Length: 106
Image (cartoon, rainbow, N blue to C red; front, side, top):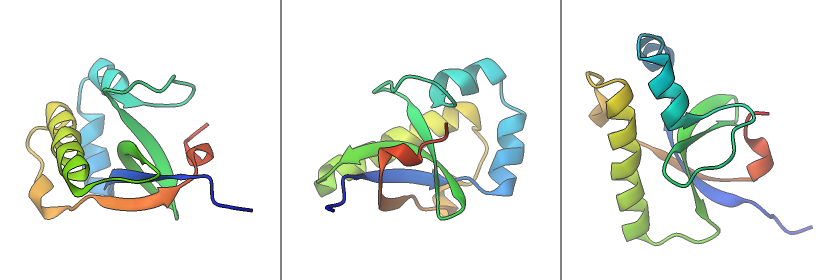
């Protein structure tokens, strides 16, 4: 059976970031990060679990060009900086990996 997933570009959520996110305005977090039962919104981030790690990011589709990935990287960091402005994002690179959309939290 062929793989039916998409590429996902995501920020790995570590315990330090998770703790800082808890301090953010809960309404902003809910507005910018899709959680359980949310409908997919093209402008905001999705939460996925992959190999035991939590990520906030965006689906890229089945094929992605480098320019698309670079623009999406800037968008992801921009949204996260609105939630947790004083975090050392430059120290944590984004991950890109294939995943089935069914791996979103449910």
